[in-house]
Image 1 (cartoon, rainbow over the protein chains, first blue to last red):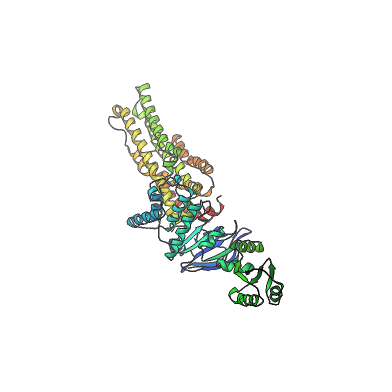
Image 2: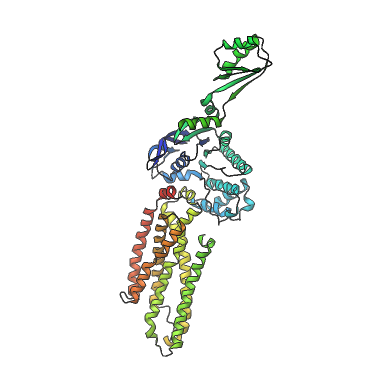
Length: 306
Length: 231
C-alpha cells in the first residue's frame, strides 16, 4: 500500500530524511519510531504530498508521491492526524467534521451519517454542538481522528496521536486504532511511545534521519542482543557447571542456582542443555527465555547510529 | 468564522462603515442648516467624493478578515490538515476570498443605504426629488466597490501567505488600502473625475487586476513554505 525507496528530503544542508526505504502492507499498522527531529513528520508530510521530496520515490497504492496529477488522488485516499490537531476551535465538533466532509465532496446524507457514526464511536456525540475549543486534549485528539476518517480513507497517517494525552484518552485512541485494523485500513503511526508501538504495531521502523532498523517488535528486540535462556535450579553443583562448560554456550553464567546463556533459537538450543543438566543430576525448577526489551533495542540502535 | 470569534474584526466591520455614513449624512445636513442658501449644485462635488468613500470602505473592511485568513490558520494550526485534503490551492484561496467578500459587501451596502436615505431626506426639497441613487453611486456600489473589495482581499491574502505572524499581517493589511485613498485624493484634486464614465473605466481596470491578482495569489501560495517555515 505504501512504498518508499531511497526517499530523501533536505532542508538546505540539513538532511532530514536520508535514503529511507520501506514498504507497508495493506491493513498493516506500521509504527515509525524515532527521537525528536528524526524526520518522522517530514516523512509523513512527503507521503501526504504536503511537501516535496528531494530525491527517491514513494508510492501510495498506484499513485506516485510527488507526481502533480497523482497528488489530489493520494490526498483523497489518505487521512492525516497531524501532531498539532488543528481543529477550528470556534466551530462545533459536528461542524468541524461537516466542513471536512464537504472538502471531500461527501453528500449531505453521507456527511450526516459519517458525522454521527464517528462522534458516537468516539464518545463525542453528546458534545457535538460544543465548540472544539472547549474540548479537553483527549477529546480534541479523538475529534481529529474522526476528521481524518470522515471520508473513509484507505490509509491513515497518525503523527504522535497520543502525545500529551492522559492514559485513559490514550487508551481510547489506541483501541480505536486497533478497531480500524479490523476494517483493513493501513495505518502509519508516528510515535516515540515505545510501549504504544509494541502494543499496536504489526511492524516498526526506527528512524534517525536514516532508517536504522525495521521489523516486528520481537525482531527488533532480537537484533540487539538476541535472547537469553534462564534456567532456575534447586542448586548448582560443580558437576553441572563442568558439564555445561563443555557445551558451546555463549555467555554462560552460573550463580546462585541460576544458569543463564545467550540463545538465538531457544526451541532448538534449549532441549539438549536441559537434558545435559538433568543427566548431570541437576534439578530444574523453571526454564524461561528472556529477550531484550524494545526500549533497549531502540536506544541501542539509535545511539549506535548517532 | 474569524469574524464571529474576533471581536476587533466585528467592530471594524460594523462600526467603521456606520460611522462614515452617519458622519457624511450629518455633514450634508449641517451644511444646509448652517448655510440655508446653499444650492445642490454647490455641493455636488462633495457628494461625489462622499460616494467614493464606499469604494474606500470596500477596500478597508476586508483587510482584517483577509489578512487573518491565512495567518489565522497558522494560529489555530489548522492549515496542515486542510492542505492534506484534495482541495486545490485555488479552491482554498477562493474560499478565503468568499469568506471576506460577502461580509464586506453586506456592510458596505448597509452603510450606503443609511447614507443615501439620510442624505436624501436632507436634500429632498432642494433636489426636487431623490438625489440618490444616481448613476455614480450605482456604478460604485455594483461594480467598483465589489471589485475593490476583491482586489483588497487578494492583496491581503497574498501578503498574509507571506508573513508568519498575525501582527505583521495586520500591519501590512492596514497599508494595503493606501492606493485606493490615492485614487480618492486624485479625484479630490481634479487629476481624475469621479463621474460615472471615469468610475466605469476604473471598474474595467479593477476587473482585469482582480482576475490577474487571483492567479498571482494562487502562484505565490507556497504550501511547502507555509508548512516548513512557519513556526
